[in-house]
Image (cartoon, rainbow, N blue to C red; front, side):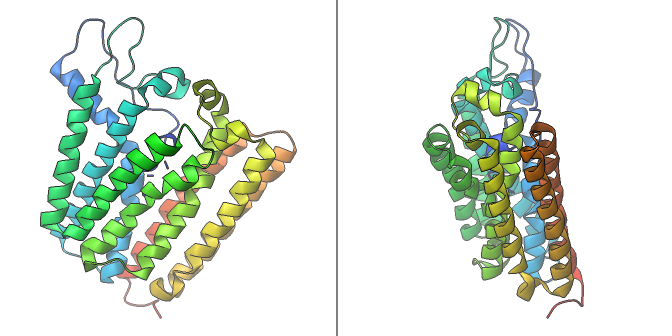
Length: 330
């Protein structure tokens, strides 16, 4: 789970939970150990990991219908964060040419600026990514179970090979398909608790899957010129605002409908929250449509972007709370 958008990899990096990217500057000819370590940490995109972790813990509570052991929660969250950091780091290595062109990402640690050196070198970043991936696999496999570890590794592979290398520079559907990488955390969380993948986890996978395009396209409308300059065929680059908003509305309705399919597992309290939150998000999506027809896009699209983060966070908080309550379930 694009762009956490995981405990796992990850929302595709361009669907990052923050428009502004963490930066680490290097002075010409000078790279200290502290600078390299800070740079490697920045490449993991910790703010994206935070959003992805929000989808992991509530699923674990739902799978247990209560609190799993503290050890299992820690292992799953830390292992997931390591996997997400690995995938995000590889993404930064592959996309460093694009990052250098785009204003929003031009200060990432792998981009050399003002005639100086990059804060971190590609081989250093790739070494860090391998170590993080190995740590995630061993921690999840030995501390939870090997199905959770395999799903974490699958998320890394999907994010790197399907999204970053396969789709991002070639297809306007990149975020629709590639965004599935950000959905894996719910599967990992469920598998860590139960040793299998349940239907409730599949439903929540669908919620995050349909949430990703509206979330990301709202951001991409704001930074359309950046993506166009980098030659990345994001939907707002290759289609007009009216088409983008129409697709945002379609995916928003699919997201809300999928969230309601969880009611038989999560109960009526969750159902009430899902209806209210879904209605709120749909109202924001249709508001964006109205503003686009009036010729105003960027400011309102960022409003929807931020509302999408709030929607997903609150929906999964509702999952967590209702999983812990002794009443409210069918």
